Structures are given as C-alpha cells and as structure tokens.
Amino acid sequence: MQKAIRPYESSWTKTLPGNSIFLSKNEDKPSSSSLSWLTSASPKPTSLSTKRSSNLVVMENAVVVFARRGCCMGHVAKRLLLTHGVNPLVVEIGEEDDNNNYDNIISDKEKLPMMYIGGKLFGGLENLMAAHINGDLVPTLRQAGALWL
Image (cartoon, rainbow, N blue to C red; front, side):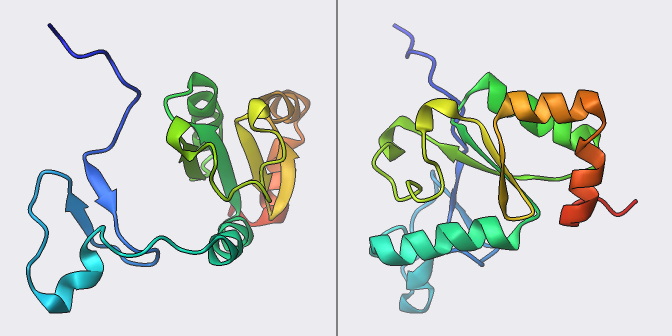
C-alpha cells in the first residue's frame, strides 16, 4: 500500500542558526570531529535561549509569517507578500511543535497564520487581506523597511 500523504517536508535539515550549510536527510553524518556542529545531535536549546532567539527572529526580520506546516492560508499570505516584492521569513510550525517555545510570540495558535511586520504584531490573514484591499499594506511595508520603492 502507498504511504499516506503527509504535509510538505523538506529533504534538507537546517543546522545551527546563522550557518548557511545544510545536510541532506539522506546523507550520512560527517565523521570528522571538526564538523561535529553540523550534526543534529547537538543539544536542544533551553527554553530561555529559544525564547530569546524567537524574539530575535521577529526583531531582525522586516516581515515574519508564522504558519502551520502545509497550511494553505500560510501559503496565501506568503504569496501575497511575494507579489508586493517582499520576501518574508516563514516559520512553519508542525504538530510536533505544539509544545514549542513560540508561546511568547504566538498567543493563540488557532489563529495561524500570524504576521509580524516591523517587529510588531500585524495580525492574521484577514488583517493582511484587509490592508491589501484598503491600500494600507504598501505604506506599512515601506515603514518596516521591507520595500525599497
């Protein structure tokens, strides 16, 4: 029998934040001790450091979209922002991440996708669509530094 269709899952695993090196899930882990930081065996960050890093994600990026993995509404939000010339950072939250440390950023996980523009909570997809229709989205994105026009 065929396997059940699962939400999109990348074939690449991210390494530590700030590194641009990725490992394929199918590749063997490097055996060199000098490359030990590339393996996924690194300890999980503490909740305090994760909370700090999640706040840094919001503050360092002009536009951040938190969405459920495989959610069509998160895809719509990303595509709408891409049509305006904005390349948002999309943080996909899976079912296994329900007990993650994004609780200080995401107050209600039922209302995903959630956008942060310029480090401030902008709202969900409805707020994004309303701002787009009213013409308020482009000035907001300019003020946040996400648009260069």
